[in-house]
Length: 285
View 1 (cartoon, rainbow, N blue to C red):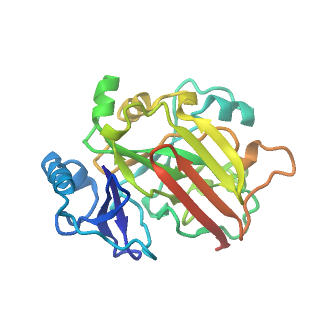
View 2: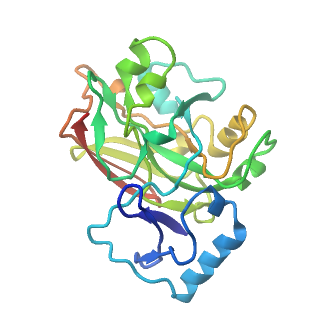
């Protein structure tokens, strides 16, 4: 299933994109797309049945905003330097263990919402990422099978980063990762049954129509199952939590000087095979 949330900020309604690309209203069946729903197999089965029966009313998608596909996210866990080609382009050593950092849930916006360039920023960068959405409480997982069983589905994340804040201003990475609007998410949450191999997905990003990132999740140093298992050793993952699993080569930081960092007026588009497409115009904060 392709689950999503549509409507104005703070007033999104749950919806489903059917196999014919028709937007269907779920608000008569579930209150929202959130951790409670993703952990409820019976509720998900009812949605599947309703979709198959054709009883879900169609929504007019014209002019309708798409919000983040998951409401009330508890935490956004991110994995740094998780692609072999990205590590090479930045001159970083291949990590021996996953690098974990956090983004605040309030950085999450809709897939086509405006991204704000922070005040004083000179190095705002792009990063297209496969995001994993958790559907089961996960702690101290032992196997890859257990890890994948805890995954409700997948979506597209844009891990926007301000490199000067992240690297040159002291401390950890948080200052360059948690600026407002720095985590567009969506458009859809695609349930895990529709993504049989999360390590076989094409990942692409364009800036002003120019292809900048063209990679594959097969390049991940730590694949999805290992990432989920590993993270569960250090924190409890709850339904509705999100893990951004890293970005392939092609970010601005890895380009020759002068590096083409983002500015107000730039347009970023990104997509992952089977998970949909995002588009953001940048403006000054």
